[in-house]
Image 1 (tube, rainbow, N blue to C red):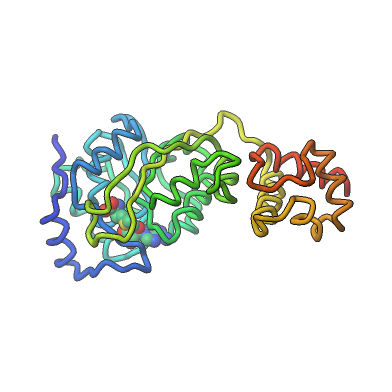
Image 2: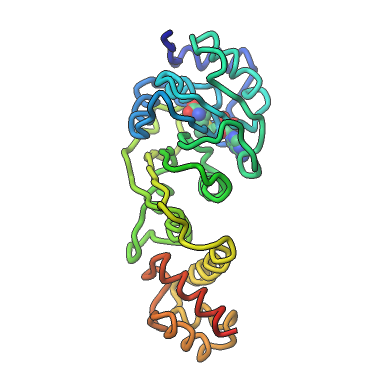
Length: 283
Ligand code: SAM
């Protein structure tokens, strides 16, 4: 059976039928271009026997392109009007029964998903893209790789290496889970409504082995947050309050093999993890 993708006219017809006016609050910018959704699925290298999770399926443009490969999809949508129409759209467009499961839930707080998904593919709601990604990496350990569309600046941040201007807390936290790379750019013109910024595709590959335990992660993220709260400060100052003064902070940083006068933007996630471990040993 062949799946028919949605065109611009289908999107507008469905929105009108559901009386949906896209809202900024939910980051509702729908893709109205079949080439773009195919490009996302190709970048994710989805194959027909894989289990995919999609965050924010909306009216179903990207969902259908994933289903076109033969993969099965679990789609998590917060807006009840969109969530309740999706299964019908899939069936109207030629999707086989049982291939799509719709979960009406806030993706930021969902903790269980049917179908044990292994690949994430999504055009993320822009206002929550980073927290939702980190939540999924943390909660669904079976997710091995994925491709998401985010606004250009966020994507560049996720993929940034230490030392670059835009390297920040999201870059270091994302790196805890694996490797991130830019995988293409997308014009704002493929969306309805047209947003104020262009988008990029970001691909990730989970590391074969977790860097550390959940306690390790929480301690490391705490150090990352402190280091970037005062981005321009040297680490020994940025961490001084937490570590009992700047002399104590310097000692701990040296024990971790980190220059006390360095700034957070110079450190990779491994260095942040060493600092967290040195803090623990000093207590
Ligand atoms: N995938 C569709 C597309 O490409 O046309 C829609 C993408 S749109 C950028 C983001 C979607 O995420 C919207 O459908 C919106 O309702 C949904 N959404 C927003 N916040 C969400 C959340 N916290 N949890 C789940 N879905 C959310």
